[in-house]
Amino acid sequence: MNISIEPRHLACQSRQRGFSLIEILIAMLILAVGVLGIAALQFKGLQFSTDSHFRSQISTLAADISDRMRINRANAVSYIANYTVTTTRPTGCNEVTGATAANDLLCWRAQVFDALPPTSTANITAAGGGLYAVTLGWTDRENAVHNIVYTFQP
Image (cartoon, helix red, strand yellow):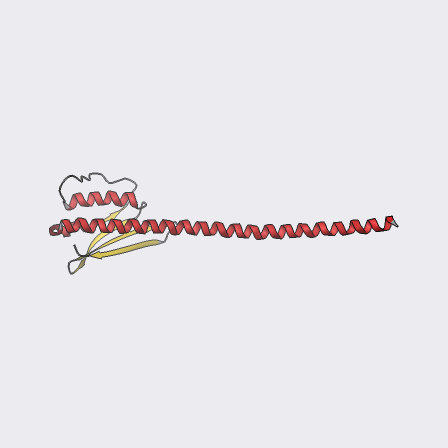
């Protein structure tokens, strides 16, 4: 009698082992999908954090050049310029000298270089009616171009 019971008992154990292996494989698949989802969220969070950082830098840069133009209001037209950030930091800024448009632009370009990545753009244009526009833009990792325009009156 003992001989007939034991083979049945062994057959049940074999089926249970295979069933447990399938459960483990499914659990690992679900875990892998979850980990990939968390990694994607981390990547998007980093991307949004970088964009937010550039936007705050751009706000500061636009406020700075508008203040420089307000100080030198008589020569506001002299500030109209286009600038593309290169890999070499602009030199020649002298904060001690008076507020001249050329010096202010040199100092501002150095600040733009420090704040934004290469190939970013910084343009100051006359918007008409005594208004000026500062357009600052950068290209993100996905090659999407972001431009932010600030219009003000010096």
